[in-house]
Image 1 (cartoon, rainbow, N blue to C red):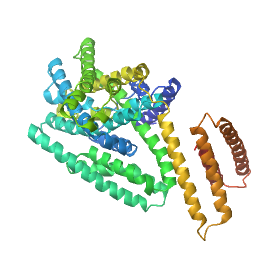
Image 2: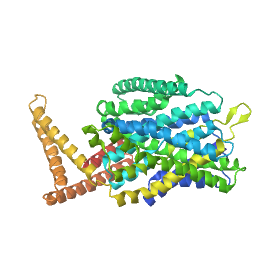
Image 3: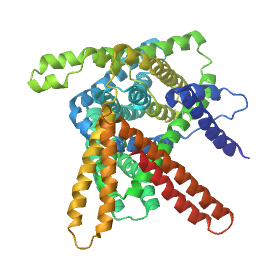
Length: 527
């Protein structure tokens, strides 16, 4: 096999092994990936990986941003818009500025553009690890939405500032006024392009009956927004995010059920693979970066890494314990009181500022040279420091976050389950009302209507039993026994169908279709 084939196979095997380790240890997989990626990078015999910086952001970012926006809770984003705007703009710029000042003062010879590039790369948060921990421990929905919403929008601010820093590095500097104007124009243009692309994607997918074609369009949607926006000088990040938000609102009711079911599965895999490959790739690049840092002692590198990581953490802590009080002083409207978050909740939010895939992609996308024949000398140092910040925030904060949530008792266990039960019950009641209306139609059959009514009445009783556990234990026990019976019967049917395929009496395609129906029937038992 060629070197590229070995590298690809090695990446996939590494990702699978690290994911299995994360599941075995019951910790969010980004934490295992960052540790495993660093370890893999130093295995002997591995080839040096050289990625084209110009394609890194284009290849990795659009699907990550699109899926994050697609799966976001739009209602919660709208409710927390002011806080999200402050965090995604103010906190990002404050972090970038503080890191730039510190790095420029601490590292001899580090230019202001390079220091600011470092600051912009480590300023956006990645909500993946924090969101996984919070959901598993039953943190209040408002906290989870705040962390995920912040991670969704601060990428745009950070990457626009990153573009300004990179332009200065390669000699295409601009004034502060022009940079601010470029930021506003880029944001407005990105949102506009994202809305147009979202409308077009929704229109096309609404009239596409083939699930595979529709899913292919979905996978390309982030690129369809990101690439044209970048080409026109607008924010590709905001374009991809806007398209994802638009489809998240519109796609729920306009897409066929089969397309939605397959879409969730496909996107979960794609999102995981992109994140995992990024962590492993940076681990491979880390070895090359360290080889290029021979002029620094190990003590110097450790000091720089601790200082930058500490600044990132401290700025976030200071922000969450100063800005909310300033808002209270400036805004005394009654509605402001409802938005307030207690000190315990703010501490959890402040400690949830892990860095991840966006910072990784931005670090890999740094230019190799400032001009033809003049390599970018600070690139290796920046990659090392970015990895150090990601390592520190993911491992230290990620592993300590569960203990902090338990210590502060910032949980609302069962809240999401109660919301789900309430929604399912209301949907079932709507279904029964719709069945009664259908019964009056001439084209419906009485036996079909009655069979459907019995099915939904059974579902309603079972959901009611789950919602009222104290008075309905017996019914719930019977329901669980019925579910077990159905599973046994379905497994017996699967065995028969497989045997028919093995005897050559039916084709493999027929077997697959029948077993898929059995799988869907079993999956419905969980509803």
